[in-house]
Length: 167
Image: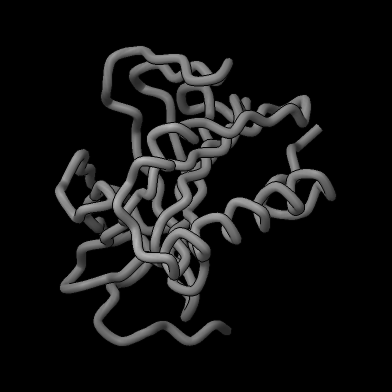
């Protein structure tokens, strides 16, 4: 059995996710149901509540379900997007982000603008390179973010979890 970090809630309990930009300003917030809590990660499930959108061939509709994994030890977080309440996986959307932190029942993820879209056919697209290039980041943050992207890309190419699609 995996030990649960103190003060980080229990599976089933809702947590609020605060999506922040690279300067720490909130850009999106949503409540999510906790699926798993482990020393290095927290997994939440939520409903996509924004207007329909398509990003690099990954279409998201209101009512779609996403399962997001926040890592406390990696420079990215990943969410799988499912069509409605069913099992059909639309794809993965990955944010290059500073390691998540959990404070008083809230999860904070600082997005550094590099995003990786992975579709069920294995194709992937890196987004926001121009935006990332103009961010005022420390050399350390820039290097860690690029290493996170390289790690994700290697995992996609090898078909490793969390990118193993059912089928």
